[in-house]
Image (cartoon, rainbow, N blue to C red; front, top):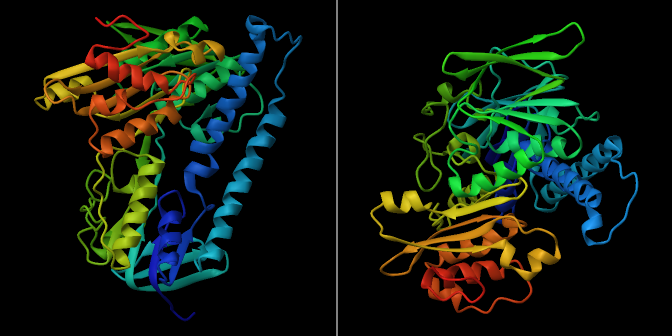
Length: 469
């Protein structure tokens, strides 16, 4: 079979690869995307989007059950999980179909198959019809993403011992769910099934949930989980699992201090993180360096091999879809000869627990470690009229600033719609805003966003709707 030639070959059609390819198409580059499963990657197919659909559905179900608080009387409220899953899958198909349409509209070619580098400019692709050889005259972009980490003692069986991929597609709510890992995936998906009726138990090896997040924020989420009946074990290590005669699972856990015990469940979700997909893609043949599974890159997204770029999860932390997208756009601009670089101030992150958590910039501890004398401003959701009106009063806004200059260093939110509210904080950090900039900006009333303004004013000592201490 003859070698096909393109200016740019993008390996991976996920949230890094597909925006990169679309931008390259807009910049009039001849580009090919190679994808082995489905465009959209983890994010669109079984990660970000489907999990948020389930979270929204379970939250609406829970809110309806407690609707009597504000006069909504609904008897025998129940969730049809089959319809919920069908609805979720419809969203996925609409989004992946949209990506394919954008490829066509921007002149991007798509080849379904498994890619492997055979040199710095060549790629071999195994397709259902055979093997194709592809040459890239200008650049190759590695956007292979990441995969669920599987622990040796907890091999996935796809039904009872599962990872995130299977967890977003359960059509039967487990009576008892044990989650190994108190990180983002474990708490988000654990919360879904807890709201739908599962008895939730979380086993976390470290001393706190959501490692890396300000403990002030995680405490609010932990309190809500416990209030709803979750059992949370920290500094605990899951050792093994055995299937019982009644088909239940017995999970042996080391709780520390020489104490071990067994947790019985119907489904075990292993959610201990993701690992980069850098193995078996021919990096050695092309001479691309790999460090601890990740492909190091410079501010332009370049690897150590001229003409080869890496973006998204495979190129390093944070392993976030929006970071991958931005890197994809940057690399596309660089390849096309435009001026661009990874020069952002912060990469915001959101955790879709209940309540939500969203952060941008430095934590209070990180700011102090960086040598700043810090000034903190806080404002609770419970003091917002809008939060009371939508029955979402848990949580608070927290802004971290330099005590001398008042320049904003970080924004941390735990509460309803935190994932949407954080964008103001990210923009403020990008523009090097000061507390005065946020505090003096008129925010519409009644909204949740007023909390950002009041938190900034609290940092200055003159918030109106709480006592300034």
